[in-house]
Amino acid sequence: MIPRLYEPLSDYLRPNRVLVIYGPRQVGKTTLLQRFLQTTSLRYKLDSGDDMRVRLLLGSQEFSRILEYLEGYQLYALDKAQEIPHIGKALKIIVDNIPGIRVIATGSSSFSLAGEVGEPLTGRKRTLLLYPLAQEELFAIHNRYELRQNLSDFLVYGTYPEVVTSTSRREKQTLISEIAHSYLLKDILAFERVRHSRLLWNLLQLLAYQIGHEVSLNELATQLGANLKTIRRYLDLLEQTFVIQRVHALSRNPRKEVTGKVKYYFCDPGIRNAVIARFAPLEERDDVGALWENFVFMERLKYRAYHAIPANVWYWRTYTQQEIDLVEEREGQLFGYECKWNPRRKVSAPSAWNRLYPQARFQVISPENYLPFVSPHD
Image (cartoon, rainbow, N blue to C red):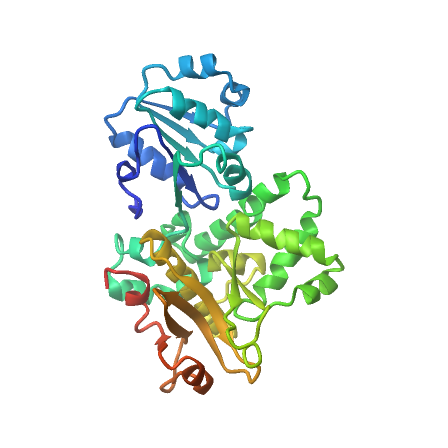
């Protein structure tokens, strides 16, 4: 079992507060919760949003019934909380009326759970976002040499826990394909206003072929025969359910720098490959550079999230096609990072970057030096 960076959860629990754990399906939220419950000395009750009895009880928002149900418990753990209507109001009743109680709620869909818990639990919650396994977490089963040796598998099959711990590439392919086809869009398709599952899947496939490239929403709409409003809405839902991640262009000089454009990355490269059914080894592919860029972007995002590193994030490109894959602004300082899978020569910062941002820093991120960029262990 691979330890997660949020362990032990006791570090994040506070009396009369709700600890909310978000994340994509199948990334290990339930496992993280169960491992904590196996070691806690607190008297707890564990429920699941799949249980109709629990849905009716918490959905009723009846003070007396809910408080009687949890009488004598120090901790209430609720898995799959997004399944319960108005769950935020029920959790507010619990933390406001049971002295000293701690609450943990896990959920896979941010558009349903975040919307439900946001306003009712203002000032009463702490939120943790759990991703597929980060490189830092994989130090539990690999040393630095092994992590670099396994990079090809990470780029092809991704880092969902069950995929990483499987023993064969055939099994990895089967598992990530199952996640993509059975779980990936489950939250979105359950959303009452989403009717066109084929359109949603076709949109994902188009995005899969465009990772690392600027995306035109008008072109997406034209290619799919859909209106722009629908495409925008579906893209927002895909982001909110942790399938894709959007990044905008840095533009402080509109006459020279591209503005108003976006790129999309997949939150797991294995999901991207499963969407287009492409699992060929890296030496047989023509998209290794794009996969590496996607991988670096997401591993860096995990690193910032898990270590609470505040940053503004963009990509950068000029109208003369000079570009940088990832730009971070931290404490007022700009840092440019170019992702190169196999740099054959020394790569320098673009001349326009040096001219427009003379105080900014620049670094190439390759398989040889990526670990310090995404993990404090290196």
